[in-house]
Image (cartoon, rainbow, N blue to C red; front, side):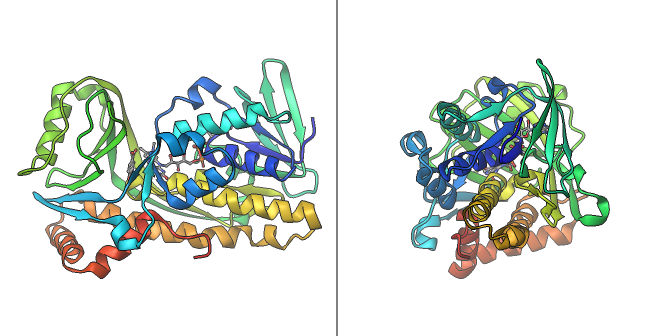
Length: 393
Ligand code: RFL
Ligand code: PHB
């Protein structure tokens, strides 16, 4: 098999890249290890920046997003029993965020790719391996039910997430990795309960962080800080609801209604960057190249920003043979990546309970919260970072 761009991973990065290339008349094949049904039903991100919404709409895959996505113009912070609203649109002078689940974005992209005559996504491909990334004839080997496959390409896009195989194809001497692990994790819940409030609630409490998000009027996404070693089976429904209620309880503030818990998971928090994001003709995008803790809601937005840059660079190459955009890919992406790292680390430090507890850090957190309340400038910096940066910034 031969194609122009071989893409490993049918997440937001891989699928959008394939679609953007298709719009420019460039052929690609997406190799995905999971089934289509699993990809379309895995619960992950929910917050889309305006720039992400714009690119999906411009690419012609925003019809359902426009109809079903819900625009939020602010969010609430609850800090040791005090409430403060961050009025995003008022502070940014326009841009807000849209709540639309990541798996809905994936459904829209898969529908668009499979509707196109050349839209090839190879689901349930096992044992993928990148070969010859440093040469002009790189490729991907993998297994399907039909046997071993060999896909030869001009370029490879490694969009296979943090645990994927593409990053491992870069020799250790040709990249540098930056890591930070956090001593806590998030317990995530999907519940069949009514909406708690009109906007998201980020909560700092002496027991730890909690977050109230939403997927639809009848389905909520709730999180609370836990230890990374937490065993899901140790948390009965009653224990989960008690913990959430004690963290979110506040005079006059809404609390989640108790109801069926549809799904629960424990998500570790980590920050990670691989520099550079390219090696030979292999280009990493999204979580394969960088991870942010979910507190700032940046991961999927960064994945989308990467592939927008990569699609443009590949388009320039095929149009004119000009390699300059491809050469600049990594440095163009890394500016935004480190900006998002900085913001996500800041949000994480503001809202989580340090573990082990650190009384000095707790006072600093409170001082930071007071600064957000007292200073419009401080709140504006938070709002601008949260809603995301324009493409030129
Ligand atoms: P993905 O989504 O992980 O997709 C990678 C795909 O590659 C496949 N794969 C392979 N395929 C073939 N061969 C192999 N060897 C393969 N290895 C892996 C996988 O099966 C998968 O389908 O990476 P991508 O495309 O870079 O997208 C990144 C985003 O998914 C991620 O950053 C976000 O979900 C992060 N995130 C959030 N981002 C936001 O922008 N806004 C949010 O509100 C937000 N909330 C979140 C989040 C992540 C969370 N978790 C689960 C860590 C909330 C949570 C709880
Ligand atoms: C979510 O809805 O899953 C969500 C919202 C905000 C975050 C992280 C996750 O910061």
